[in-house]
Image (cartoon, rainbow, N blue to C red; front, side, top):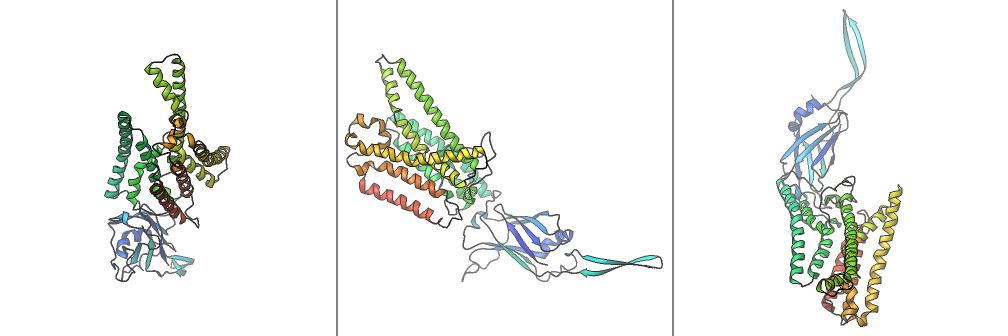
Length: 444
């Protein structure tokens, strides 16, 4: 008979599997007497490394399966967030038979066949032939400990609660900055830059690298910039347990939560169209008036052509591109609704490429007159605070779209892809290229 650690999951649970049926009643009573349970860290096999067998805070048998071969268990580690962080080296759990422990009298379930019955002096005597006996061949089993997300740990629990509260802190910072910038009349450029970079930071944990588990929660408040606020999607929770890959699962970024961002993009567009209609009707009412109110309404209406729509597109560009590429890679056409979603994804992806080229082309074509206030008025959102003295300076919006397009494409690469390592390389290169451009051209 052999035994192995069958599996260990991210919530510190696992199972032991025996190759033959065992006596679970005896095993439950003698498990901790028979086995020594410990773990070794990644430095154990290194020269001069830590040669300690670390004890667990707790190890509990939770379920004995009906087939008399599998036992489930739950572990408690003192610092679970420090285990399973490395890929090429691993912390390992060991379940080892204690030296000298006598398990031969109780562990096996004896099996016999060909029973023979004799009647002697009115009594039935049963003789068992072909009795099967077992020997425990393996005396030790070990298994790699994965990245653990054990929220029973006090530190991880407290940090998760802090992260939940920080959702509202980030929302408060954004709203306070909006009010102060409007009040002081210095323009909203700092607010746009804050939101746009929060959008990039928010998806950092789903790159192909590992974070200490509680750091995933440290990044979660930045999802507010994508209007992802709720841990469970309101009204429709079907996709809250559906994840694109393991990195998304570690980050607790389900398809349902990504759907919140997509719905938010649609809601904002509807609100923008309604606002445009309201100001258009107000301008018609003030058509023959020349007072301050009429002037203000007409100036606000002019912002819809095309600045507000350009700003909206810049804010949702990353999400729409990311969602469209993800859906295209998934490629599930099993239902009519999914086919329509794939078709919409192709349309959005093409628009994500064509629209920035169109906008940048307009800027370059009208470069000669962009220095005039009235000429640049309709496209001022793309050129906020940018010096128009050189075409190299007005290329800044092209970097904005190019970086986000590249990031969206790389984020959707499957983990098992051969070129997944290029994800980090290209993200880093794009950021460095933009820094060099800022230093060389000084566009602002």
